[in-house]
Image 1 (cartoon, rainbow, N blue to C red):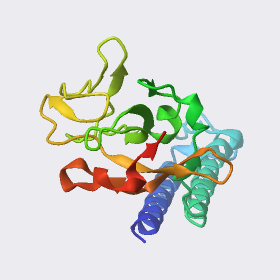
Image 2 (tube, rainbow, N blue to C red):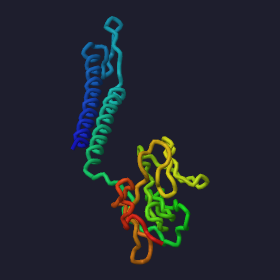
Image 3 (cartoon, rainbow, N blue to C red):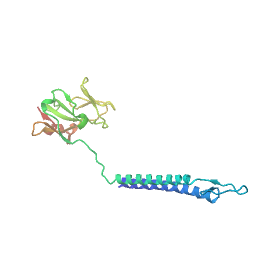
Image 4 (cartoon, helix red, strand yellow):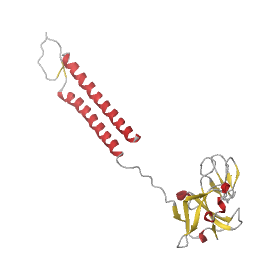
Amino acid sequence: MNAILHAILLSVAMMLIVVALNVVIAASIFKLINKNQVSLIPKTSSLSGPTVRFVSRRAVFSWISLGWAAFTASALSATAATGRFMFPNVLFEPPSTFKAGYPREVQPGRVDTRFKERFGIWLVHDKEPISGDVAIVALSDICTHLGCIPNWLEDAQKFKCPCHGSGYYKNGINFEGPTPRPLERFAISLADDGQILVDKNRKFQYEKGEWSNPASFLRT
């Protein structure tokens, strides 16, 4: 509603500017004519008569055409701005539930970064910090400090946030920087065709004891 009101006010403002421009042009022309300084029709002047300057019809029509061109442009812009809000804003986002390949594609002891750019997750195949079992988890790539995007540093074997220096182990547990808690997990399971199925609609937080939920990891 506020966006539509903004578009209407913008259109009205543009129309007022163009109308004012046309009024100024017309007033200037009539002022010159009334003062007998300009004649639109050539006349024969005598030596004893007043000096009259002539303005061609072409010049007058040029000014009038300029005003109408500005008016037309304003009307078209106003129509386009108003029509823009007749269509809903659509934000295309990746699906919240998706398949992430087969478990054998995620190598033990490794962080799979294939799905970070599109889906915002890392697949980690490592030992569980709670149960000690080897499992695959889907870690969120959102830093739990202020929401920045950490990077996986293979040489240092840690996730490192470039904004404020927060660091996380491979399993998502925080150990350095200002971050107050570990990375979040998403629900993970096997689809009917044997592929990894990640559901970003369900989150699991370590500090709430939710990492012990079987839906938060996939045993291998």
